[in-house]
Length: 148
Image 1 (cartoon, helix red, strand yellow):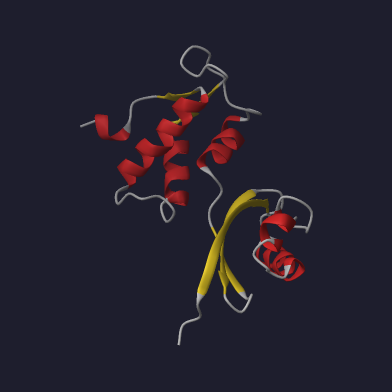
Image 2 (tube, rainbow, N blue to C red):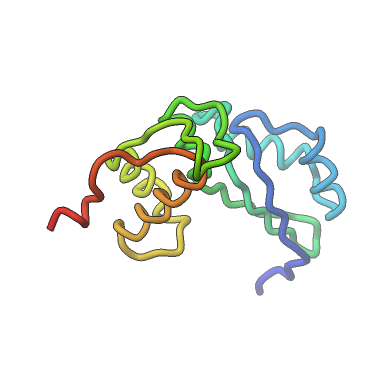
């Protein structure tokens, strides 16, 4: 028999650095989850990705137990790492802050494919390129699907 689900909690935590301080503590405490148990499990699962921002979807059950799924880092965070930019542009349409290549966009799209709601690599690359554009990053070169 399946357990009864009482709610979901979405968080973004740094890999290997979860602690009961805000924002994790209050978000989980309000659902009645054992905060220290979550922190221990999360840190054990993410010790190979220290400091990377990782989205987590926590499923809370009626008996106060929980499961969680760790997603891939957000495309914006990966784009900032690759382009070596500290933050996106305030006016992305006018002021560009960095550049990425289509090869880098493809690398991020392959990494995030499981978390995106698309079926082909080309559509995933278009999504990542759109994120880059809205951050004020220029995607250099011709898109791979334009070379036909």
